[in-house]
Amino acid sequence: MQKYFILSNGVKLPKIGYGTYKCTDGSDERVVRMALEAGYRLLDTAAAYENEIYVGKAIKESQIPREEIFLTSKVWKTNLGYEKTKESFEASLKRLGVEYLDLFLLHWPKPDPDCNDWKELDRESWKALEEFYHAGKVRAIGVSNFLPHHLEALMETADVRPMVNQLELHVGYLQEAAVGYCKSWGIQVQAWSPLGRRRVLEEPIVQQMAAKYDVSPAQFLLCFLLQQDLAVVPKASSLERMQQNLELPDLEILAEDLYLLRCLPQIGWGGEHPDLARVQ
Image 1 (tube, rainbow, N blue to C red):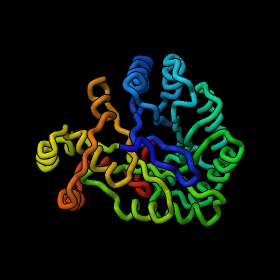
Image 2: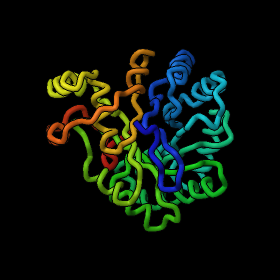
Image 3: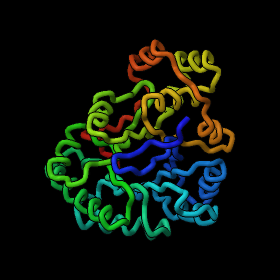
Image 4: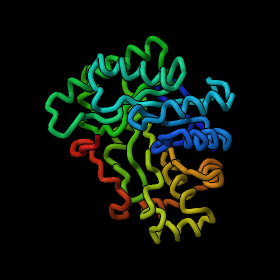
């Protein structure tokens, strides 16, 4: 299996990365180091995760050359706007102990559901991201949790099109309209929470399919997304599961099974809609 997707600007994005959400204290620095030892070379973090210091320490202690690691971070929605985004970016670099990022994202399109000037805030933030990109401080820029109407508003004034959109995607919550829109514009979609939650892993159809293809349910869910050209950032806390999620078999799921899975009712959704969520 090819290890990378090629972004619209030619940058190679590893198909499988490690999500560091909830790695929020010094003990979890060990988990990030374990992920690097398991072979992960994409680490996904964010200012809101409050773990950039630990991610940075894990990278440094791994002694893996910086250029071999694809490092992603994000500006939180309460820091939208030109100046706040610039400050957030520089603070992330400092906490991570690096001179550049491989990918920097706007984490959410709105500070809160009642915000009326979110379009202008997104555009101001994007202007800052474009400046970082042109200055070589970040190799690629993008968004997270942006639906088509958010993207259209952003691209009305953007000079550089988003290269990545990170969305919650898994069996039972595939956001096909948003994915289709991104693909039509050459925006690479990356799935956060690609395994869903326990409800998805324990879904009888998922377990039956995994047994049919002789893989674990988690491996099957990741292969399902990758076969549709969606990058993934799963999270695991044990070395065994990390390796299983990274070392996937060269699996081709039959078309009839793909259709069945894409037509399942909604299961495992995290409940955070970009226009409605009051995530703090």
